Length: 418
Image (cartoon, rainbow, N blue to C red):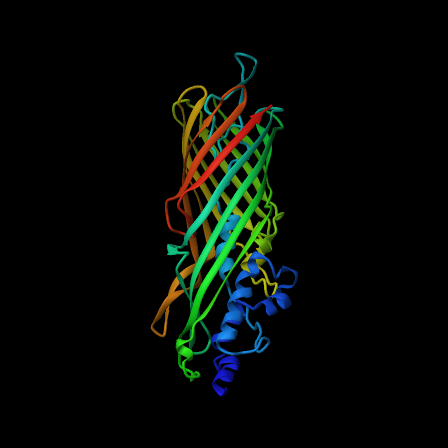
């Protein structure tokens, strides 16, 4: 029992296994006490399943220890990228109109445009477009490490290391309503209203991987196991945007814009980022029918959110600022069909990420900090079956391993311009 007390209360250098796990992943009792009304949320999944297993395995009663430090947890890696760094469809992706002085009227732009990036063209004066987009993400790795087999280390301030072998199941479905309106021939405003469905499952097998402190007989061979799932569905973070052409030529132009992500989604359930994001951007494009290239560049400032902090203590941290970029082209196969290709990405600055670590000759991963690049390619089409109706389909696939990774994500869209 003395050994267990030493495990609980630690020594000069701090707590060990149970204290370490409890500091970051609390039991349902602690979840209810410290997560409050959010004890059944997605962010509280790990606290609700991990610590009870450890407490039971090592014979400690609930309430023996509590949270004493605020350390990054899985949510700061997973949920931050899930809610603020995934590709989003362009909110003004309807049929665009431009003024033709020879005809003294507005005519539709020949190429039908990209799906997940911006061109300089605006929708046209007093034009109104409504759209719907569906996309599905099923994640398989993070920073190049298999989500279904992550050896997570919890090194403590003392000489004990806890090793969790985690199997995570994480997916996101997005249904997005879009609306755009042309304030003038060169300025339009738009909105993207997402409805998200999030699934997060976790199963783990954990043990004390190394210890310099005397433990009860068999403790190093004891195994803690647990599993659980959480699902959430609801409104995500609404994005509002204004874009205006500052330079216009016969077939090309340059536009500047401002996109604002509003914290309308439930951050505790990974439906939203929990903080405002402000992204000024520039978009340049050339409107040749057979090859219409475009390029986007923006920088996003983000606020503080619980997803970067601790759901247990209620503390928040800043969501990483991001450089957003896109380069691609459209190709008009005929007047009704356009193929498109884009490379899009986000560079997260000073973000939490999974990094390798070796403690007392035990290898695994822990939460560290660094820049994260998430690059995606999108290949698809847009088809104009009649009048001003557009239907489209794209396949998004990751082209690097940075951050949250998915193999293939389908995107389906439909829009109509009035």
